[in-house]
Image 1 (cartoon, rainbow, N blue to C red):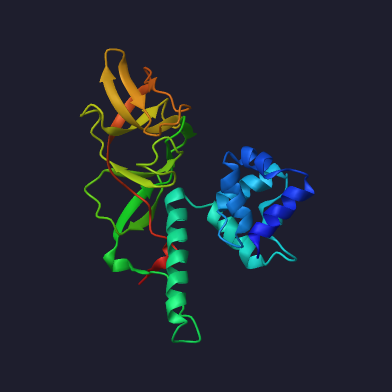
Image 2: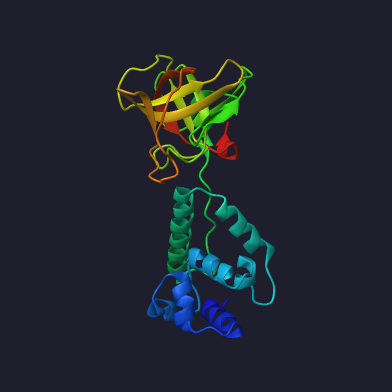
Length: 258
């Protein structure tokens, strides 16, 4: 696929100059011109912005005559990953391309790279409560006293409870969807990360926040620098359950072998 030609054709079909498109993309005309001169390697972020400018789908930007289903599926899966996972995928594809180039010098067929698997007995097992802790603005939950098992290759220290994070306010330290373990010891050290309960039993709103005890009470702070995540103080019906001990992202069950 000649991405450069596609970018040029879209621009000309919409009667825009390179300067106009570059301004919409937030880059210089010179930078944009280099993309039109290339045949490959346009970044996905750039292509998504191009699709927005021309009010078309990303697939329309990428397609020539057809849209291979494997390409569509690859892009859909990629967009659902966390940023760190996206970076890993990009690094892996670059490594595979480099290895293929070297391999092709002496072999006709490129090697197939196996996805890493994990032996269950080598992993750490964690029982997670079937509820989620909000790392956003708080989420009402009902504790059904059920749990499920997850696995990690990261050592886990002693803990009393574990729960999954819902929200992005504690990123990048504690990503959305990750697991945190915590102890039931209430408030202890100023500035530590805590699990907090707000509301009555069965109708609780649970949070995971950095907590500071100052003259106005317990102030809850988000690690994510996005200004939408503002500090707030705990109310009278709030209680600090305990400090977070560890956080980790679970191993995909499909990669675990017995």
